[in-house]
Length: 208
Image (cartoon, rainbow, N blue to C red; front, side, top):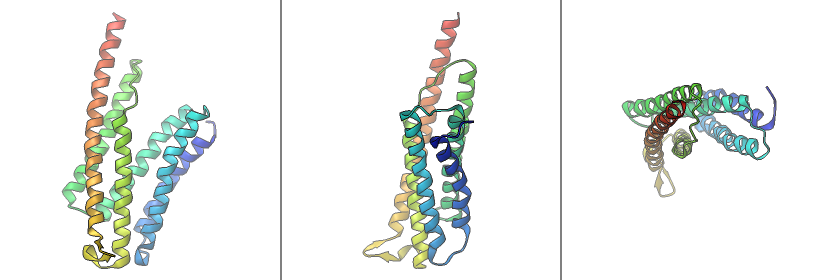
C-alpha cells in the first residue's frame, strides 16, 4: 500500500466515524457532544470530496484507495444515518428502518453487481444518481444532527424557537432531504442494474 495524501484522507475519514459515534452518544449537557460530532462529521464528509479530487488531479489513484474509499464512505454515511434516525429519535421507527434498509440493500446489491461485472471484464461507468444520492444523505444527516443538537441545547422540544422559526421545521426539512436521498438510492440501483445487463449482453455478443 502506498501512503499518499488521498489514502491518508480516506483512512482519516474511517477513523473519524467511531469518534462521531462516541461524541453523539455521550450525554454532554446542552447538546455540546452532538455539536462537536456534527463538526467532525462535516470534516469527514469534506475529506470524501477532497481525496478523490486530489487522487485524480495528481494521478494518485491506487487500488487500495478505490477499495478503502468505498468502505470509509459507507461507514461514515450509514453510521450518521443510524445515529440521527434511531438514536436521535427524529421520526417514526418504521420510516427510519425503511430508509436505512433501502440505502444498505442498495449498496450491497451494487457491490455484488460490480463484483460480477469485474469477473466478466465488464466496465460499469460511475452513476451520477449515486453521487447525488450521497450528497443528499450527507446533507440530511447534517441537518438532522443540527436539529438534535439544538433540541438538546434548548431542552424545549420541537416548539422551542430560534427567532421566529420553530426548530421542528429543521427536522421536517432534514427528513425530506433524507427521503429524497433514499429515492435516489433506488433510482441509482435501477440504473446500475440496467447498465450491467446491457454490458453483459454486449460482452456475450463479443465472445461469440
